[in-house]
View (cartoon, rainbow, N blue to C red):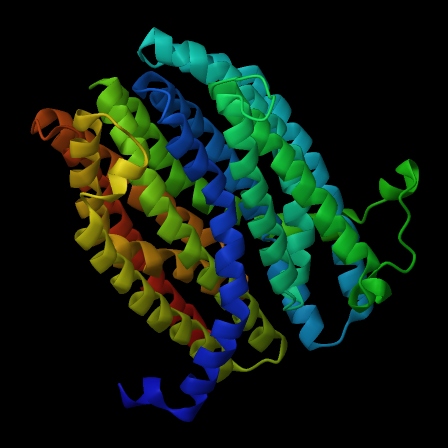
Length: 452
């Protein structure tokens, strides 16, 4: 344990913290849009809240894939930055923007086409009828969000993280204001109810994309990377297929890693919908609370990816291990504090999101379960980030698939329906999947970092 308190580790904790705290707020901003929607729509009614839960089960799945693919740029930028290879990073900027723009359009078209699939999961029809139009507008927001993420991941690779944080916080404040105006019809706005929430989110994400573009385009620190860049359509389409493959070789597995985890929770929404709309609304509340700490931990994961990528560029095995393990220690401390907070406030937190007594009671019990998987959740997400920093993404993708879909979901179904534990049993199964992922990813980083 003394080595974790050595000078090298203390310096690593400081460097990771300074890089991570803006990333924590930036990542938190992505999920806070859904949290705000859940809380404010919950003031309308349980059916509307269940509709948000059902639509978010598909939307969040696509959202995390898009964010994950954009992560393919970050470790490459970090490694090139360590070598002062400006031309390589200029190419990564152009190709990152290209990939994320195309990706946002493709994801919007894909989910717009398949959104009627919500009719096939044996859900309450009144919930589905409201979920589909809500989902379609939310998916439109994927285009500006992917563009924002493309710029954000490039700047993070260069260790410029604070402006993205401020932009994200500002956009979330705007989203809260627009939700207030458009859901309930204040200040002369027409009361749009549930649909007002998704249009507020879309407008906020357009503002995020425009602000992030302006920052990267006009800031003097990035001028060198715009040399030779052209926004003319055919010039923009001239791409290096080899570099695109290199980015996607990291980005697609990174996106799938998130999809396998978030997809397990998304499919849990379907299973819980077989129980009742009240259970579904309670699941959405507890998931919103748990996802908040998860996205904060993913900020530490992003910092670990950048710092490990820097050390890889410097060809320092000890630096790689120190950067990775210091992030593990930090996330354990942070998520341990969050677990204690969940336990202390499990009766209060659901009241922020709902007025229904049954919904609050179920959500309270789920938040207690969430408290116990906080450590596992933190370890596995930092493990993915640290491994992404050394460009190890294929085996971690297999690990996440196994942990959530071969262990977590089958156990959720067994405990929830065969053992008659209901929604709590489904969450016990998901907790087991998270624990398996955490153990295997930690061992994987230890193994890979020793071999470099």
